[in-house]
Amino acid sequence: MSKLPVLEVFGPTIQGEGMVTGQKTMFVRTAGCDYACSWCDSAFTWDGSAKDGIKQMTPEQIWQSLKEAGGSRFSHVTISGGNPALYPQMGDFVRLLHEERIDVALETQGSRWQDWFVEVDDLTLSPKPPSSNMTADFEKLDLIVARLIDAGRQAHVSQKIVVFDEADYDFAKQAAKRYPQLDTYLQTGNPDVETADDEKLRTDLLSRYEALIDRVMADEEMNDVRVLPQLHTLLWGNMRGV
Amino acid sequence: MSKLPVLEVFGPTIQGEGMVTGQKTMFVRTAGCDYACSWCDSAFTWDGSAKDGIKQMTPEQIWQSLKEAGGSRFSHVTISGGNPALYPQMGDFVRLLHEERIDVALETQGSRWQDWFVEVDDLTLSPKPPSSNMTADFEKLDLIVARLIDAGRQAHVSQKIVVFDEADYDFAKQAAKRYPQLDTYLQTGNPDVETADDEKLRTDLLSRYEALIDRVMADEEMNDVRVLPQLHTLLWGNMRGV
Ligand code: SF4
Ligand code: SF4
Image (cartoon, rainbow over all chains, first blue to last red; front, top):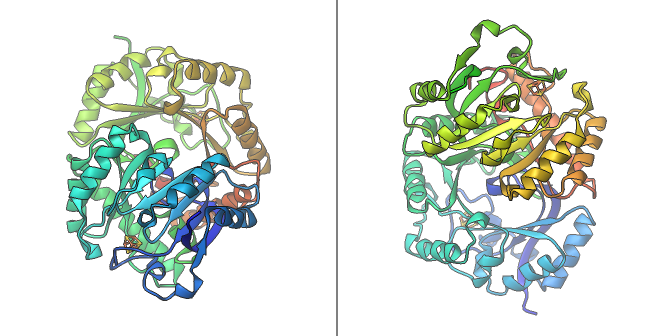
């Protein structure tokens, strides 16, 4: 079976963000991204700094790593990146997990389609707002969303937008209007993905979260949305592997 | 139309807990509860302390109050208490909200059935654990869950258990096993529903949240659960009306 480039396998821990916030889950992090977001909190997956840690693994090998780390203490796996949607062969791994009766979550910025998207239990599309310095490809997203809706996957898909500033907020609004079929999650940006001062980061995150809530509550064009912080950052700061 | 005893109408704000955590919503709080939980954070709804604030309101009057408070800035209403499931006439209000194209969430401890349960979009059953000093009525809950499942409402119902201590945790486990059809949410208890020291409360809540996460992560009998804090308490402490 074809291999996948894996950087981390860890857990169980909670999913700290998005559509299954709080879910007990294992994480598999793939290497490689076609974006380079200014505030990427996983830049080590694509900036070369962790390239010696990348292992080319078959689905069966990843499953063995999951069992080693998590034992029998999980029924849910989150595939993260980087952009795990770079890999057509990911479908084999998703199917292996389903054979093991494991639910699968996956997040991608939505830069490309993969046929196995329709098999993911909790699929998060996270188009990147202006503060990332990337340009979201809405035509590609239109195609992705249309295919998922056509396949009856509405309940299994959401979009999540990180909001740092007013331009990001307008972007989130545009995305919410464009895809009313999807549940929309707004998420507070992490202003400092390097700091080890957890206390300051926590205070800063909560005040940003409150400001984002105020903004949404005042806006009659943003009613059917969910506004969430990153729970893992509130709890553990920028620590990796939790 | 028959009236409902209403104590508070406020919002929009976020739903701070449970199955639609983060959702932009209005709140309607009814008076009256058939329980008296030791750590109830809404004791004013049933202990007589706010009895002069109770208004007997028709569904149409509650709707007017919602529009006054929230204008056009909402599409979701959460009905809270006390125990809003005390009132058979609540169905009229739920239907009025649906006519206005508003989604409806409601939380009850599950001490009694109402036919309108099947019309609630996000129904949270929150059986009370031992630390509440109440005794959850699992036979009644069996009947409620069975009726909801029979009515095809699985995606619209969850159970949420507050966990303060080991006995509560065992109770949560029992509930999760008893109702595998329902999504199960574990929630950190608020250890001090009176304090105005938000900073201390926040620190205390986060360390309790982390301890609950650790407990769940170590337990292979508690895999398919979600563990959440109360976001509104992290943000605003014990303040009412936010
Ligand atoms: S798409 Fe995600 S992983 Fe890729 S650079 Fe942006 S934030 Fe980082
Ligand atoms: S059931 Fe809810 S409202 Fe009633 S006493 Fe218990 S916590 Fe308070």
